[in-house]
Image 1 (cartoon, one colour):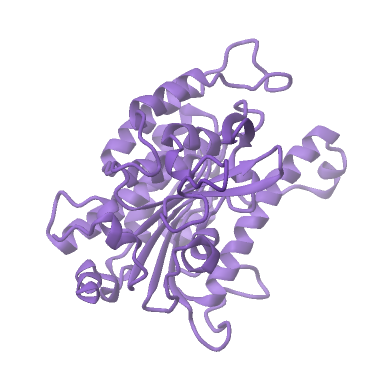
Image 2 (spheres, one colour; image 1 turned 90 degrees about the horizontal axis):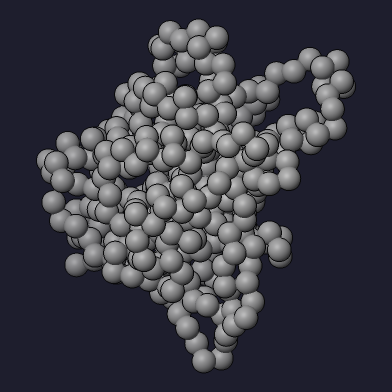
Length: 389
């Protein structure tokens, strides 16, 4: 199979293929179940058992745990290699000493995470030859309150060092440091300190603290808005976005129980709900403007938006893979018989004991949800090569 160069991946010549990966802590192992199925489908299509997702996708981006996976894929790792990494990561990282409650100091030590990122990404830089395709890492700079979209397009404003500016160029950022920044979830890990310009440093927290824990819409903006430098032409057969989630749990509380919640509990639950709301807004907008074979019902009023379009046309092709930690939904949608009691607690982002069940659930869901026809022939690598000729 032909393997595009980095330059060809980044070039604004359609068709272009984007992979988007949500945040979700240890639930990233569920995402890898979807990616294993995608990798298998593409290997079968191209009759190439060595195909890696960095060969097919022109831009891979992620938030938090999704940033770890996205960066691993972008440097050429297979899904199996990342599954092995995650099994080790979950047990090494999410280990709580008795004195860590997450109130005054973070719940988890960063040493194990830093060690894992060091052994995976070494001293590779965002602009280094080790990065084989387009890469976006979603971060949140907490000291300035601004989302940071860190990516590797050489025509972006902040990628290269210039004499007129003292900023540290994106090309020189260490992958291990930027990924650590994207995973620095408040309460769980301390912020990451990164030099951004001259003597100035930024304090970064988990990218999920931005509106883009589901980074699919941000990836579309990155690829198509003029200011970012990518300038890919939009269109139903020009841009394909494949988006993989980490599973979600529907909130269901009695009114009286909510009214009796302590202030801290209500604040924490509100933050989680806000992240879910942002994810669903991203989902709604993308289903509104895109052709999709996997459209989810937004709510009872809007349905799945199949009959809606923005400006009378579809602007891209979009597929979304995710699941609900709910017995009835899994039975109705995926024909999986799992009792609600066995799903209890699977939505936790920091429980390594869930790893095996999450992995099995992701693999089983992917077998039902991911289909070869979700990757239209118009987006085949050969089609892209022909357009470059």
